[in-house]
Image (cartoon, rainbow, N blue to C red):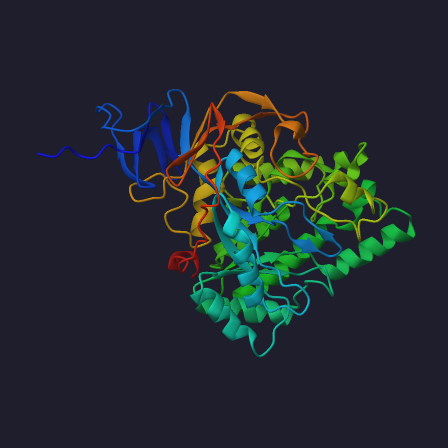
Length: 466
């Protein structure tokens, strides 16, 4: 009689946390999948390796729905590639990243998707893509259908950056309607461009368009105005919509009010909008904190955090953009032309866990929903964002009380700074298991090589769309 094959890995002794609940359990992994989540009082099954997670949280590997990896935006190219960004992601407990295929001038959305997929072959973690549409023409509907057939069911549009990537209201309407028919969701960067251009012009006339005055150049009103307009369009055509990097309680409230009217609308925010405020623009290096939308007033940050804690924010994206201080310094005097964005794929977990769970008391189940489960569902990524039988064995073990000081010198993103330098943070990944492989443990990082899969998004579940 042959004995059963031993499991590759068992994780025992910890508290397993899913979006729907938590409790002590033993997680059994074989062949890159979770094959059992069993009663912790049962004997451990035969195994090759056991991980004792006593006193720790065992959560799903993170799904980062908002990364920009090695992209050229305007005159500047980000410093990382998929190899470097994916290694940093794994260090930070993120096992799946979703990047943006933003077309270069003259490039079609489909070609941009293929280019990104070619670049992603060196990734250490699994990857997925958002498409991007800038303007509508007689080929766009077919391209959206082809992207959906090819596993890209989320498409980003910008309501700002005129003459670069901005999509007009008519394009937004057509994409919302067409993508919905393909089982997808439009992702929208919502800032009213005419308000921003006027605010920037007024700031420049007053010699206040420098990094230190960045918050003046993209007012909260611009975000609220664009969110309201896009929601009206989504409601008109009966389509779902997802708003990236929302920064204000007003914007979140607009989305929730639309939800109550039956619109399938979703809110994403980012760790920097939960942890930092506009006072950073008064420091020694204001250029390091220039991002769009900008960091907001302290009272706005507090109100946003309150909305997140009660469950009014659906997902947590890093909006990772890897620039150096020297790149940002080149046009420190004019935020209209300097590169904007912050490095953050590695620090998404500890920054948000610290602010929302350790400090504000968010239930850890709700945090897991924002960090992993909802991003997976809203991107059509089956098998991700949960610890359950049949799911991918993407697992993070973290100590919910251990604290470390953030320092750029200790991080692995290809930038020379972190916006959280010197911050005391809780929620660092102690062990990361990606596709059943232990890639981070007490002995350090174990580079799995370029084994990350390019994931095809399935049709997003119907209850999230209508």
